Amino acid sequence: MIPFVDLKTQYASIKAEVNAAIQGVLDSCQFTLGSEVSAFETEFAAHCQAAHGIGVNSGTSALHLALLAAGIGPGDEVITVPFTFMATVSAVDYARATPVFVDIDPRSFTMDVTAIEAAITGRTKAIVPVHLYGQPADMDPILELARRHGLVVIEDAAQAHGAEYKGRRVGSIGDLGCFSFYPGKNLGAYGEGGMVVTNNSGHARTIRMLRDWGAEKKYDHVLKGYNYRLESLQAAVLRVKLRHLDRWTEGRRAAADRYDRSLAGSGIPTPECMPYARHVYHIYAVRNSERQRWQETLLAQGIQTGIHYPFPVHLLPAFADLGYSAGDFPHSESAAAEVLSLPMFAELSVEQTDAIADALRDLASVRAASRSWARTA
Ligand SMILES: *Cc1c(COP(=O)(O)O)cnc(C)c1O
Image (cartoon, rainbow, N blue to C red; front, side, top):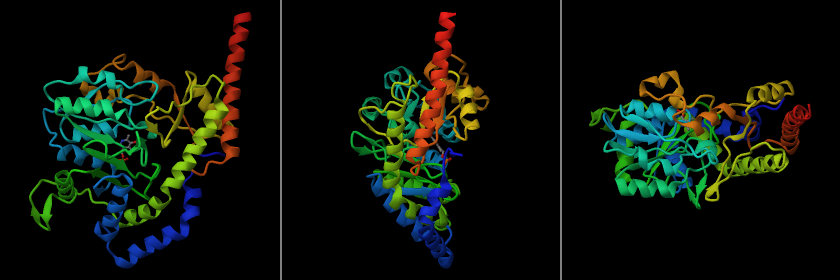
């Protein structure tokens, strides 16, 4: 069986370090915030080339507090994409603002920067590009539009730890950047976690208060805040794992490169890495109109795959109130119908990527053969 993600192999490779870090937290009995959290904030912000990092309890909380710190509230519109995990959009909803969608560029799966301007109204306050699958959105045109219209840019970098846009690390390119440490993410906690990074010290201070009940000092609540604190155990695990992240990212990129080369010429569309991007391959998705049959056939051969995501957010029942309908964002809709995520993790072996690519090539050639048979008949 080749799993879609393999957290056990990774844990086995760092077991002694992780166990010692956890024991350290247990011995300290400091279970939330504290020195592990502040050390991790410093280390992760540095990894993102950002001045400040504020640890929170999830990527969703990071997005929520970034929006609040940017002053987003009722009546404001926030431009984002429908081809993302629903949390991007829910965070806008938490801030009681209105999500406004623009379609994706089908080559990069990220925001179509040529569609943004038409979506800007007098109520637009922010743009939230999503670095989907670990590939940065095309940030320069986004920043230029934001400057021209006085908008805040909040990066959803939940899938893109360490990714680079024109040599700059994501998260610190816009005004605020949001990360998730959900276990399956490129840098994953052993539980939940998230972080906002920013170069803006005012935003950092606001978010630091909001994550801990809006308190300036204990019991001095100057803002209506939240219990969004990052746990010390998670920070301790994440500090250990951060030391291995660059090597793991290279493992992902090497696996993606092997997939690219083995699938070249098969007729299967593979991910396009944009010239401005250093892709970190949180997800490696191929496309096929017979995705379900492919997924079932692969599973029968012991190959687990995933779908990210089967429905674009504008068509989810949960967001019916936004009033969108089928056909509004054709590139997001066809991506949602066709993408199939192949196993992707740093430890994926050559034998595994070869076996997966062989299975896919067989599927593609069966289809090509049945097509040519249909033509001759
Ligand atoms: C995972 C994810 C989130 C939410 O992060 P959580 O830590 O699960 O709350 C937000 N946006 C995107 C694009 C994600 O992939």
